[in-house]
Image 1 (cartoon, rainbow, N blue to C red):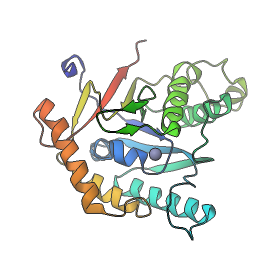
Image 2: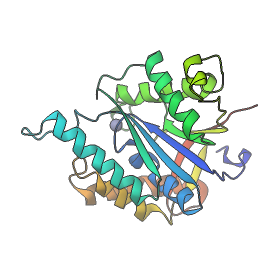
Image 3: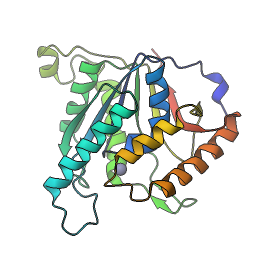
Image 4: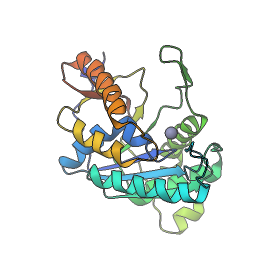
Length: 242
Ligand SMILES: [Zn+2]
């Protein structure tokens, strides 16, 4: 555990960027709710339209997109967040393109976060958990890292954004959601219930909330033991030098 090398995080503005509605709530809602309670402004940016996430045969993609956006808006409200933007790239087909990076830079320069939360793109698979990471999650994480550094910072990157008044922005800290590895643990004992309420809002995805709550609680207890907390979420934290 290298947690001690980090100072306390007291973000003013947090931007969470993820592939699908529900990703940020599974990975970080306890932390986001905690920071919101402490006065931080929380924004979500969801890159895909979530149009593939259903096993109901009578569900159309258009219905699903609407439903999942509503669920995500509801979850953002529950964690005390300010708002959510949707880029509506096709679910399951997210690619790391300059267009995607430019769209993310646009939001970073508008919201001007001191902390960005996203998925860890180095998480490809986890034999321990019997899990291949969704390619959209990896693309979202990589495009976001590229957008944070160097593209949002450099005024000569995407000059059309600069000309439109979107000034360069340096993000101080990135928190990467990676369920297996971490260097930073956040005590979410007092915001875990809010996380579960936020997950409940994703009713089209969470069929059995008790099962999900038990799984989340077990994981939060396991992570908590690393740092002496009852319940915790963890991240790979990068404080960007200079
Ligand atoms: Zn996802």
